[in-house]
Image 1 (tube, each protein chain N blue to C red):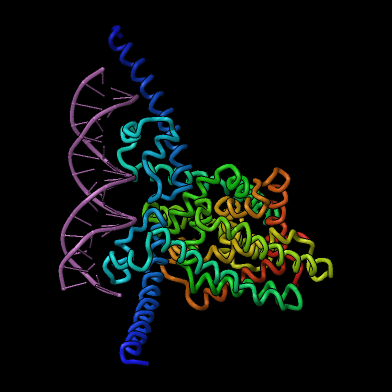
Image 2: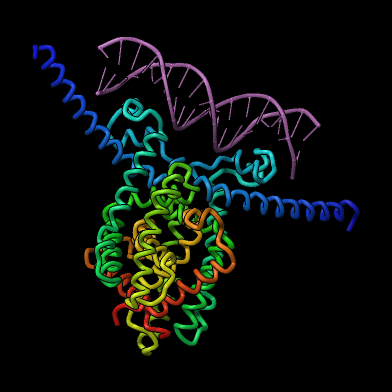
Length: 216
Length: 216
DNA sequence: GTCTATATTTCGATAGAC
DNA sequence: GTCTATCGAAATATAGAC
C-alpha cells in the first residue's frame, strides 16, 4: 500500500468515527425534543441547540426532518422488540409475564422519551411506522399470544384473552413513561424514587398476575 | 318596548345562537385535528377546512390557536371528572371500581380524540393544564384514594396501593383510545365491534378486580 | 466536515370590503 | 358576522466560503 492510500484509509476511518458520534448526539437530542414537543412542535433549530451543533449540520447527517424522526422511531422499536426475550424461554406465566412486566417497566424508566415518541407516532395514525405495525409487530404479537394460549391450555393460568392481556401489560407499563409528568405532579412534583419504582413494578406485577390466576 | 329595542334583542339572540353553533362546530373540528396532528402539527387552515369555514372566522371566535386548544383540553377534562360519579356512592370495590372501569371504557370509545389530546398535552409537560393537575386532579385523586383505602381497611379488597391502582385503571382504559390505531391495525385493520368492546371491557374489569382480591 | 447567510415556503394573525 | 387578500414571523432546507 502506498502512502496516499494509507492516509486515505485512516482519514476515511476517522470520518466514519466522527459521523457515528455526531449521529449519536443528534439522535439523542432529537429523541428528547420530539418527545417533548411532538413532531410538528419540534424544530431543527431546537434539536441543533440541544445537540450543540449548527442547524446546517443536522441536514448534513439527516437529509430531512422526517428522516431524522424516522430513525428515532426505529431505534425505539428495536428496544421494544428485545424486551420480550425473557418471555420466550420461561417455564410458565408467573416467570414469563412477570419478567416481561419488569423489563417493560425498566424501559419506561430508562427510555421515557422513546416511549413518548412511539406513543405520539401511534396516536397520530402511525404515518411513519404503519408498515412495522402490520408486519413485525403483528407477527410478534401473534407469537406471544400463542405462548399465552399454551399456558392457558396447560391450566397454568386463567383463560384470559391473550391479546387483551398483552394490551393491559403495554398500557400499564408504558403509562409510567408516557404519563410520567402527570405521575410526577401527583407525587408532589418530585420524580419517583428507586423505592417508588420498585413499588410500582411490584403493584403492576401482583395485580396482573393475581388477575390472571397466578400467585395467591 | 319600542320597535328598535325589540329588533335589537332578537338580533342579539340570533347572534348568540350563531356564535354558539359556530363555536361548537369549530371545537369539534379542532378536537379531531389536534388529536391527529398534535398542537404543533395542527394548523388553523386544517381546522377551518374540517369545520367548513374560512380561516379568518376561527380567529373571529377564538383569538389565538392556543385559546382554541385550551378550550378543547378543558372540555375533555370536564368529561373525565364526571366519570367517577359512579365511584363515589358505591357500596364496595366490586361495584365502584367495576362501574368506574366501565365508564372510562365508554369514554375511550365515545371520545377517542379528546383522550388523545389529553395524552398529548400531558406527554408534552402539560404546558396548558399544569394548574389543573396541581389542584383539581390532585384533589380528585386524593379523594378517591381515601375511598379505596377505606375499602381496604374494611377488608373488602386486597391491600393494593390505591394510587397505583388508579394509574392502572387510567392506563388500561385510556389505552383503547390513545392506541386505538395500533389496536385497529392488529385487529386486521378493522375497528373493534360492539362485541369486541364488551370483551375488552370485561377482560379489563375481571383482571383488575381479581387482581385486587375481588371476585373469584 | 463545519458554519454563516439566505432562499423558499408556510403559518398565525389581521386589515378591511361586504 | 363573513371572507378575500395579505402582512410579518418562523420554519425547512440549501448555497457556498472555509
